[in-house]
Image (cartoon, rainbow, N blue to C red):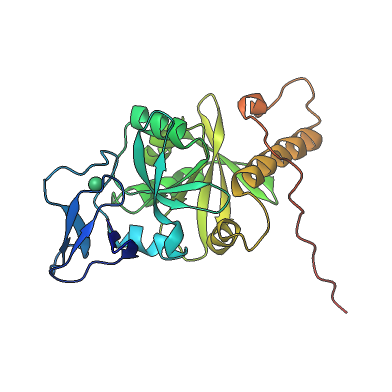
Length: 263
Ligand SMILES: [Zn+2]
């Protein structure tokens, strides 16, 4: 963990310090060595949150985009089950930064637990994922040029294969400073749909710099894509995107950005 409680406030680890775990309230000790990132650890080897994964610099870099109060927020379900959300925004959207492999079952239980969740996946953990993805992209079908929407063959990319079943939005981070890739929470037989998404915009939306609930915004985007596609291809007979299973929350609060007029 990046934070423990000392006298009730969230503190970073410093050498030889002791704090309280904000999740289980047990004593934790700071681990400030040279190899792993400085972190807080429970005295007993087991972490109280079984979903917790050891943090990498990648996790920390992502978390650091957001205010401290939003990082490592304890989320408790009605039945008392507790977990630590990587980031929880003021719209109660949970951002999970996933570096290591996660089983489909565990992913689904987190989706259910948080209900309002967006995944950001480290696309650089395995050596071949990035090349594979861009190869699949190059061989994919451009569904729309603007905004760019490409459908790619699921079997050609292992990382897409692993995440293609997700019913929640997934963003894959291949380390590009400009953009991350949104894997739409829909699929069409053997195809998945991906959209490049500005990294900065992703952050701004979640920071609330644009006044919109990010999850609703995504669902709205998705709907717009589907409508645009249907209009362009004049396909009324068959819905390309099975969007019916995506439960709309608050559509149309999103105002498309107006282009500034040039004089
Ligand atoms: Zn704990």
